Length: 285
Image (cartoon, rainbow, N blue to C red; front, side, top):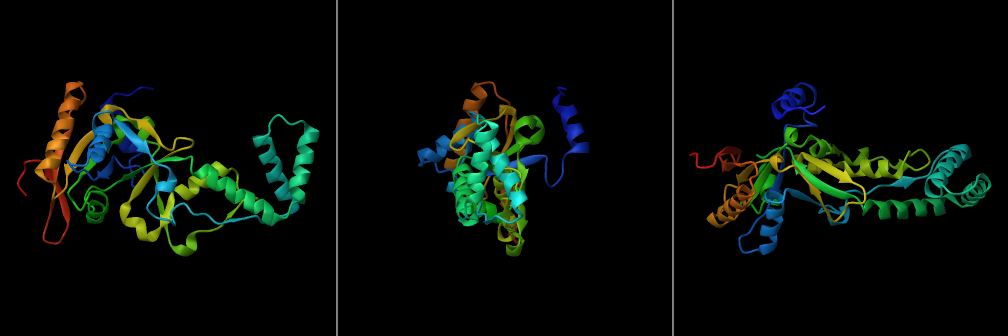
């Protein structure tokens, strides 16, 4: 059922919006007027309405996405798991061929099977495209780490304006070290599900990010198309220069020339307690 924007908002407010599915999602960005690559990347988001899907290999935390695998369980459980794997990977085998394949794998030492599982995990993981968002535009550390020490910008996306895409953004869970349990391959339903689990959990030390992630298998190194209307605001950092403002205004002018929805401009300010607050651009602090 297609709902008009306001009707969608009312429905989402009643049924969906929460810490796990907030009304808005944000992307902090560094942009330097003299760095053409940073300008091109910002243009992709502001004018072309696309988001880059990074490979997990490019993440800044080496511990991110790490998984410890084990193979534990009875021979019957292991056989069931191997049989399901063979059916999935080689669906053209006859019953007898599949039985032989299963028995061959059952005879291998579990250590050898485990090495194969780990290699398969790494190969599949790197194909996942990941797009990261934050849920708070007032986070001092996020401005410092991801927006060039408050000199960059933060883009605001509204969930209700592109539900099919933004509803894919999964809430990241933040866990203490001991909470990262090994994944038992004998009981894992699906390698994709296991990868999804590792892609949506991080160590507690990263909790300040309040991150949400869109995960798409096989889409690493590609662009995800958004509805242009999903971008509803650009927030200038506390120390954004006139050069940065000029870049943004030029891009918004190009966006306007295409007849795309206007974007609100906001200005971040920092108070004496180093707390960030946001006002409409041009509003006095």
